Every structure is written in C-alpha cells, then in structure tokens.
Length: 142
Length: 142
DNA sequence: TTACGTGCAAATCTTTTGCAAAGCA
DNA sequence: TGCTTTGCAAAAGATTTGCACGTAA
Image 1 (cartoon, chains in turn purple, cyan, brown, green):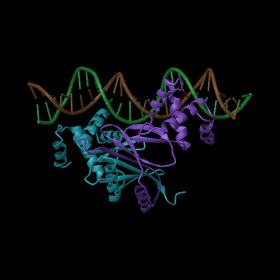
Image 2 (cartoon, chains in turn orange, yellow, brown, green):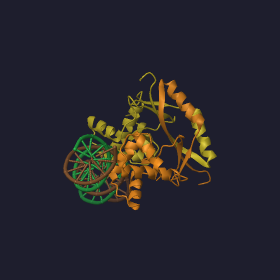
Image 3 (tube, helix red, strand yellow):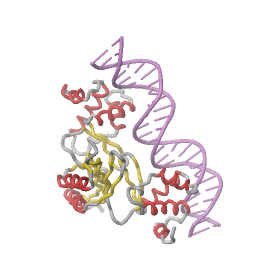
Image 4 (cartoon, chains in turn cyan, purple, yellow, blue):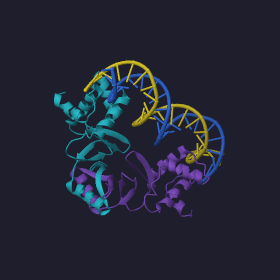
C-alpha cells in the first residue's frame, strides 16, 4: 500500500476513504498476478476484504467499483454471464475463455484492433470500445 | 406458420408443443426483419406472446429458449448487460452497438474470423465460438 | 397411457436504492 | 461544520426451481 497508489484515486476527485483504498489496492495487487487471477467478481472482492479483516459492505463494493470504472481506473468485463473487474492497465487486451477449465487467457492482436476501427468507420461510426471473448478448448482435449 | 417451420423443432427431439412452436416462430418471423428487430429479450418474447393472445408463462419462455439454444436453433447474446436471443442463421455475424441510440448493426469480417482462429491455435486451443461487440457512436455526433 | 411439458408461486442470485449514522476535508 | 460515504435492510430485476396438473406421442 505505497502512497502513490492513492494518487490515482485522488485524481478521480473522489474522497479518499478506506473502502476505496482497499478495493483499489486489491485490484492493484491482483493485477500483478499471472494468469487470470486478476479478474475478480464483486463478491470475490467482498469476500477477500472480509478475509483480511476489512468489513466493507457488499453494496459499497458495488458502488466503489462503479465509481472506479467511471473514473477509468478499473475495467468491467462480462464473460458469458459473469461480471468481473480488473485494473485498467495501459495496454488494452482481449480475452480467451477455455470452456473446459474456465481458464482466462489474455491476448492482443493489433490487426484485429485495426480492422475493428475500419469496420466501424465503414458504417459511419467511430469505435469507442469493444469486447471480444474467444471461447476455446484445448486442441488435444477430446 | 408453415409446416416446415416445425421440422427444425422436430429434429431437436423435443415434443412439438404450442409454446415451442410459438416461440420458435416468433424468432423466425423476427429474423426476417431488417435492423436489430430480431434481437429479442425473454421478456419481449413473453409480452409479444400475450399481445397475440398466447398465454405462455415467463418461466416457460426461459425454459424453451434455453432448450432451443442447446439445440442450436437459437443464439443467445449478451450486449453489455442485456440478454437477447435471435434465430441461429447459417451465416455467423458480429454486432456493433451504438452507445447513443442503442441501435444494433450486424457485420461480418472474414479476416477477423480468420485471425481469431489463428490466435486460439497459437495458444494451443481450438476456437469453438466467440462474441465480439463493438461499442460505437456516429462520426458526426459530437 | 405415460413420460414430458406447463403454469403458478416462490426461491435464487446479482445488483441497486433509501435512509440514518459515520467520516473525510 | 458540511457534504460525501457507508452500512443496513429492503427492493428490484432477471432467471430458475418445485410441484401438481395438463397434454403430445
């Protein structure tokens, strides 16, 4: 919990409160993990807070996450039916979801990004955002 | 409601019941519409049934839709938070969602499809399915 | 006939909201 | 102090389930 972590929070204009600091730092910490450890649901964050002795209510978790998403510090994804959050890093990426193991793999393909922009333009629109999820399974698996 | 409509239903092995026929045919009818008229939520289908005098319950709408999705006759999409259904046509396509008007535009790009397959393979997976939604807004619009 | 399907009511799950109390600036 | 946040409880929205009755094959 270094001081500069809160700098990002401060820039949002929101008051620096314990729940916000805690929730944001959980996402910062998890973002350093390999694999898909850094995709967390609201409830996972809530449970994690309680495991570490922070009694933040579930409504507050939702409220704070919504605020952090609006502020651009956090990204919300919906995989199939599940909603998960992760720290908004500078590098954009898409997700691949293994339908057998549930594992999430991140990837980035500049050509796909480019093509998306072109497609939007071709239809008279500008691309604001996108969500791409590949549902995959292991090659050897069955 | 031509007879051959039920042929697809019959192939699923499910019994041919009024709710199934009605729900399937609504999706068939709507699939002929231009624009995004053919993306329907479970509730829209439910309301449409009642408007046309068919008293099918909401749980049944959900049950039937789930069965039709499993059978491959219907596709389920989740745009942002909303769940919608549409007839599974032979030609796959992706969606573009205008964040100002809520309008849905369908498109297809073979190169993107190809690239997705390659990406999955590169990671040791085979591509089973994917969901791509572009969030866009009109070029001139602000 | 008889297993499958449906309606109803109620349960679940996730997310949101109203309001009084508590906390940051 | 004054306005923002939080916790609690309850509401809301979407989807699912249990069970007795109804119906296609």
